[in-house]
Image (cartoon, rainbow, N blue to C red; front, side, top):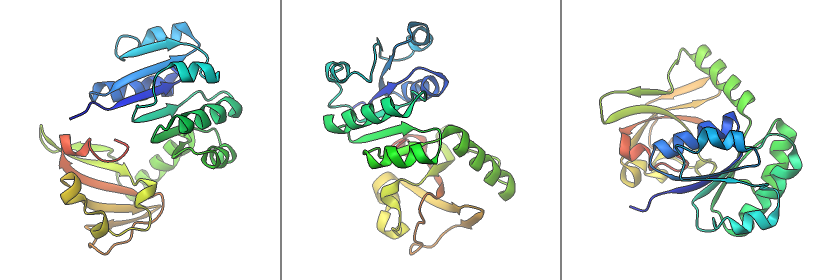
Length: 217
């Protein structure tokens, strides 16, 4: 199986955590940041670390990432460089680009210029924690054994409006959707004709190796 590859723009707290998680899962990870000190903190566990200004189009072209599986843009300083980098990543043909926003306005702009997914860490974590507390759900991952787990998984945008039967995750990925959370509502053991709402969270059961194959994992 081909090793997945990602480029992480930004080596701050958000970027470092994303890069570490990807690398620990076996992915090839390149981290790009202007701050040499920040790069020193991630250099030991990523494949490549590059000290450069990623908002410079020439820098992006020279990185040699056109065949990478995904790019994560986590600069978090200003909107303009995030927009420029997002556009360049899509022009290179990167199939999945994730950008970080500070608020709803930035999220809308980044989606307009091509970001496949936009995360707002403070807002998303706050909503996630609030929903978990209200619904009595206090787990992100439960390890059932050395090989099997139950995870909370944000449904990809491409799954919005599709039924569980249409997705056929059991045959495609070898996992089972055992719950769907939409805001404060949760459906346990949803039926095959259940239509997934936008931006819902799924509770998925499966072998750890299979769970890693889910889109965006």
